[in-house]
Length: 381
Image 1 (cartoon, rainbow, N blue to C red):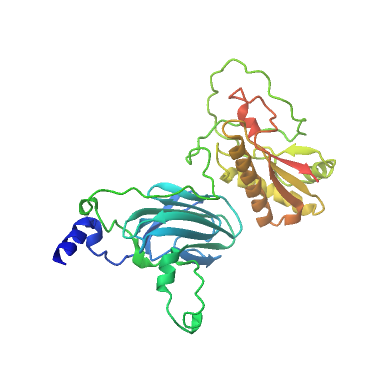
Image 2: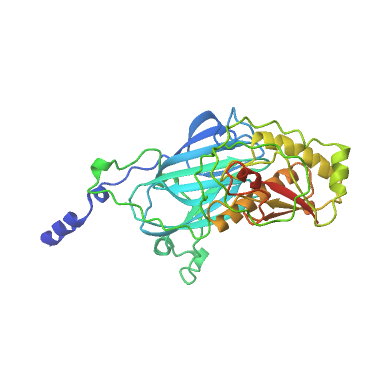
C-alpha cells in the first residue's frame, strides 16, 4: 500500500501538488476612446459581468466612447472542453495564452457569441479581454459552461431536479473570482515543465486579415459623383514610389444643406454615389473621429428625407483573401449604418452590404490609386 502511494505522488506534476490560493479577480484598465486612446484608471474587477446602461463605468470616464482591457490568469477547476459565452454591446476580443479565440471588434447592438476551448485543471492560462463601447447602452458579460462531467458531478439531489430523477440542464454561469487571478498563481519555478495551452480555433469568429495596429495611408478627398460601372482592372503598370503621406483633410462635403438633399433625392433607383472623405485605416472597420463629424451631416440630410432608402455599400481593395475582404467591407457598411441610426436615421432607410474588392473604381495595381477602392457608397433603393 505504501509503495502504491509513493508511485502516485511521483507521477503527479509538481504544480498540481500544492493547492492554489483563492483568486482575487482581474486587473481592469479603463481608457477614454474606443481604441485605448487615453488612460484614465486601473482597478480590480472580480469578474466581467457589467451592465452599465447609459452610465459611466467609473468616475472620470464618459458614458460613451470608452474602452477597457482586463488582464490576469484563469485557472480551470477541472479538465475538459469549456464553452465561453459572451454577450456584448459593442465590441470584444478574447485571448487565452496570447491566442485570439474570439474577435468581434466593431460597433453593434447587443449580440452573443461562443467559443469552445480545451483546458486542463489547475493550469494557469493567461487571460486578456478587450472591450470597446461606442454609444447608447453599455454591457459586457463573459460566462462559461463547465465540462459536462463537472456539471453532472456538481448536480445535487433536490426538488429542482426531482431528487435526481431529472438531470439539471448545464448552462453558462459567471466565471467565479475564485478562478481569476491578477498575477500568475503558479510561477514558472513551481512547475516541472510548462505545458502549452490547447486552444482550438474558434468555430465562428474569424480574426482580422491584417495586423490590429492600423497603418495610416495618404487619402485624397473625392467629390460627390456618380460611380461608374465596375470594370476589370487594367494591366499591371510599373511600380511607382509611394507618394508622401499628407495630413488628412478635414471633411467638409457632408454638411447638411438643401442642395445635398436635392441631389440625393434626384438619384434614380439603382444609381450610386460615393461618400467623400469616408475612409478607413487599412484592415480596420472603425470610424475615425473626423469621419464621424462628416457623418453627422449625412444623418441630418437623411432625417430631412425619411422617404429615401439606400443600400450602404462597403468596398475594399483586392489585397489579401477575397472572403476576408468581403467580411471587412460588410463590417464597414454595418458600422456606418449603426452610426446613422444612432443619430436619428430610421433603420428602414438603410441596408448594409459588403462587396469586398469585386467592384474597383481605381487600379489596384497602382499603390497611389488603390486607397480609392476602400470606400463606402450609397445606392438608392
